[in-house]
Length: 82
Image 1 (tube, rainbow, N blue to C red):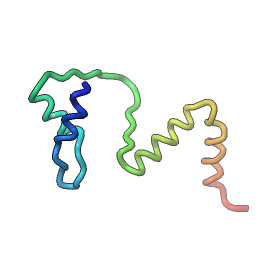
Image 2: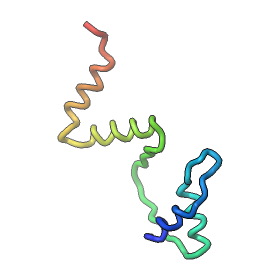
Image 3: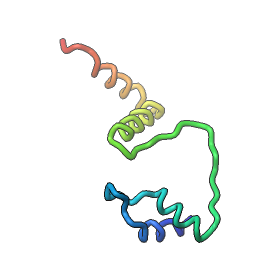
Image 4: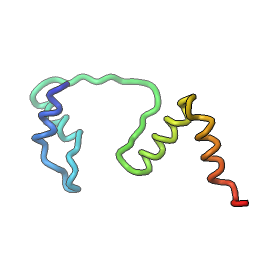
């Protein structure tokens, strides 16, 4: 829904100073119906540093162009220095 962009612009920041997408969605829901898509699969959250790191590592390991090098890099992180 392209209207969400305008709604986000008019959404006031939450107590932590961040503009919450859920607040904008609640606001937009008062103006028009909304539809969702329920899916099966993994959900990734890049909203925190840890979530971003986990998402990035997972995506890199799933990509066949990067997977062997990343697996090697990650396994070497846990090897004692020689």
